[in-house]
Structures are given as C-alpha cells and as structure tokens.
Length: 258
Ligand code: CO8
Image (cartoon, rainbow, N blue to C red; front, side, top):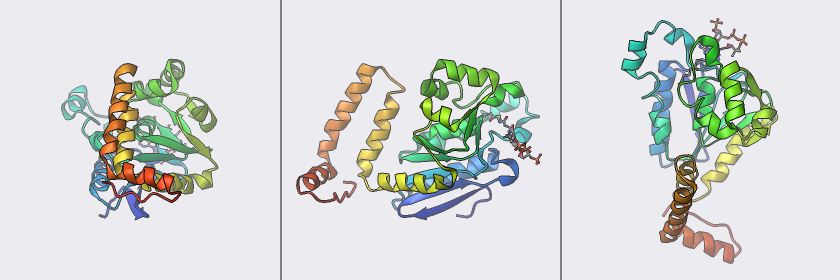
C-alpha cells in the first residue's frame, strides 16, 4: 500500500515501518497516525510478517505530536474527538512483536510511541524526553505512566517536570532501552533482532508478549500464575514438541506455528 507519511518494507518476514515526515522531524499528525495504524493492522494480519521494526530518520524517531495541528484546539474539541485515544488502538491491539529503533529525538508522543513497542534499541545519538510541560500541557499517552514504570519515579518526575532530555547512555542505565548501538548500526541491529524473533514459534512469541505485559498490569502472584499457566498451555503445541526434540537431536528447530 502507498502511504504519504510512512514507508513500509517487508523482507525476511520482518516489516520495517519508517516514519517519514522529515520536514517536521516526524511529528505525529493525524495522517501519520492513521497510516501507522493501518500499517500495523495490516502487518498483524499478514502471515508473511512475523516481527515488526518501527523507526524514524537519523535525526528524529519522532519529535512528538504535531504541535501545529493541535495548537488551536479547545478542550471540547480534544475531549469530543478523544485526541490520540483511537489512534493508538492498533498499537495496543498488536499481537506480533514490535521493536522501536530510535535514532535522534524521541520526544513527547515520540517517546511514548517508542515505549508502546515491546522494547527499544537506540542509537548513540538518541534523545528521549517528555517536554510537554514546556507547552503548558502534560504527556498524553503514557509519558507519566509507562515512563514511571520503566525508569522509576525520580527520573520520570524529573523528565516530566523539567522537560529535560535523556541521552542514550542514561536511557540504557535507567532501563528505558535494551541496547545502545553506534548510530549507523541501528537498523542492522534492530533487523537482526527482529529476524531472530521471526525464527521462533509465533505462538510462543505472542505468549511472551502477553506474559511480560501482564507484569505491568497485575500483582506478582497473579502474574506468576498467568506465566505458569501460559507455560503449561504451550505443551499443547507442536512447536513445543519440535523445539524440545530439536534440542535433544542437536539440530535447529523448525517451528510451524502450530
Ligand atoms: N510538531 C510540529 N512540528 C514540529 C515538531 C512538533 N512536535 N517538532 C519539530 N517540528 C518542526 C519545526 O516546527 C520545524 O519546522 P519549520 O522548519 O517549518 O519551522 C522543523 O520541525 C524542524 O524543527 P526545528 O527547527 O525546531 O529543529 P531543531 O533541530 O532546532 O530542534 C527539537 C529540534 C528540539 C526536536 C525541536 O524541534 C522541538 O523542541 N520540537 C518540539 C518537541 C516537543 O515539544 N514535543 C512534544 C509535543 S506535544 C506531544 O507530543 C503530546 C503527546 C500526546 C500524545 C501523542 C500521541 C501520538
């Protein structure tokens, strides 16, 4: 499908979705959010895609929601249209693993979009921030919630109250990102991680996603029970038989998502 504000390439069962509004540092306007939602929904439906990488440009993953587009809106406007509520639904519904590959600015909605992915790999030039405070507002899709769970209260308060940016080294130290790589290696590293995930059983990778996300939504006791039942349930799959047989026979497993 041809898009105006994103680019989608599929290779080796991995979809690479690139935000593409260079004139506005990939600011998330309504066209981009609609197109991104469509691309994610399509990727989730397409059997030839097993993992997704979401990225931007070298200068910006995304510099936040499009300020020009929302500056004149009233409370009644944003409340009535539930601004950004519906546009993030496709990401929330996504069952396939998705990696954010962040280079440059990931600010406001850009940082929040990256945090909605399953994990973040970033380049050495990455800068994360929730600078909404400078605009007289607050984060709208997770900057006070997901960020607090990822980096703790002290840093989340600091970033949301002062609007300061966090560099790649601090982001890795704080648990916001899983890996930092030299900027030119960002896409190869993210694609290589995605291909590794694509080789696994889809039933198992989806179960990992559900189980890890459960850790953020429930008590430890309930989460552990969920995980154990998920572990038990995977013994009903052919992929469990194949995975364990392959180990014992000292060969590569051939998963069939069954
Ligand atoms: N919205 C609209 N346009 C933007 C945005 C943005 N968020 N960010 C940058 N641009 C535009 C600039 O206006 C400029 O356009 P023009 O050349 O036409 O004036 C162009 O991109 C290049 O930007 P700069 O000239 O400012 O580039 P610099 O390298 O000097 O600075 C910065 C880069 C530091 C990233 C700077 O552009 C900046 O501070 N941007 C705004 C960052 C920000 O405040 N983000 C938060 C936005 S609010 C938000 O995200 C609320 C989240 C709610 C949920 C979102 C759900 C998706």
